[in-house]
Amino acid sequence: MGRGRGVRLVVILILLLVAGGVLYTRPINLGLDLQGGIHIVLEAVETPELPLTEDAMNRALAVIDRRINALGVTEPVLQRLGDRRIIVELPGVEDQEQAVGVVGKTAVLEFKDPTGETVLTGADLAKAAVGRDHMGRPAVDVEFTAEGAKKFAAVTTKWVGQQMPILLDNKVISSPVIQTPITEGKGQITGSGFTTESASELVVLLRAGSLPLPLEVMEIRNVGPILGKESIDRSLRAGIIGIIGVLLFMFVYYRLPGGMANLALAIYVVLVLGELALIRATLTLPGIAGVILSIGMAVDANVIIFERIKEELAAGKRARAAVQAGFSRALRTVLDANITTLITALVLFNFGTGSIKGFAVTLSLGILTSMFTAIVVTRVLLDLVIDRDPVGFSRYLGVGEATK
Image (cartoon, rainbow, N blue to C red):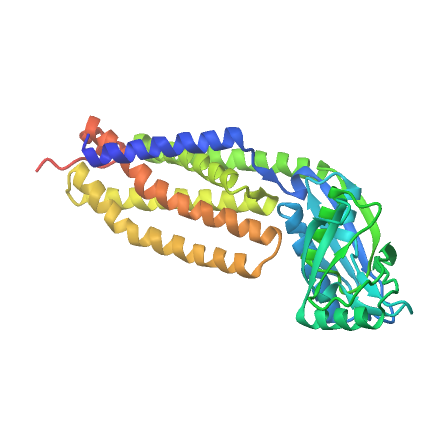
């Protein structure tokens, strides 16, 4: 065995061990369609101060998306339903109160003057962080934008000695007395019921951005994985039947080299699943479709390579020279087909949402890994076969090795 071939073999074994270790320690996340979660329908509530507009709904979608990211939920579904409703699906989340508390809470923050007029809102905030009041109790430190700081300075100058009610979702959470004008654009939200957890949750809401208009929860329900289980069972059956058919074809038609290609295919599956687990990707039914499609492309690459090798053997080349020439001739075709599909996957990822992105991610990883297994792994395994029996290798492919 050549030194370069030995190094490649060691690299393949190391990658297999790493992928296996990742799969063992970090299971793959499943999407809502496979593991269940929470389904929420939110409806925008129009008020005289906050009219319902297309821009307001788009901003509401963006704010909810940022909040979901703060929750750390993987593969969420977020979409419009009609003019005023938003659908949110959170896979793996079971606590409805937590979901509504962070995703559905309007977090409309208002600073009112003593007459009850709203002078500042959450839109005037630039920063928010957990802090402590003068008695050491949890509080939220806020810093206003340049425009917000001007408004804050004006109201605190005008109403010295008066209370300034601070409301969150129309509930008074604090009514501090304005002691002196505050011109530096910073303030603090305090409340007798504040805990470190509630202060932290408020900070998340404020950092993610206040919703441009209130949202009312119209429907919330836990979604079980029953449909997903049925889909998984059917997908597994279809996948197993298809893979067995492919493996049998490769082995019957190409015999021992086909068996080596099947081994490379098994290595490919382990590597892809390990990659998905490593990046904490969420597997949905479209994602499974992406994996299966990439498996088909991996098989196609091996078929192209073997046919090129057979052509070289039929032209009179010895086994090792035929393999080298076959891989060289097949490389351009394999790269062209895979790169074209990879570009399509990147476009889907860039412009798609939700499960479409999941499909694009699994397809992209599958394509890159299939090229590695077809070009590197299959080549190493075929070289090992040739080292043991070059004449037998040609015979297995149905072509006699040249004797010249």
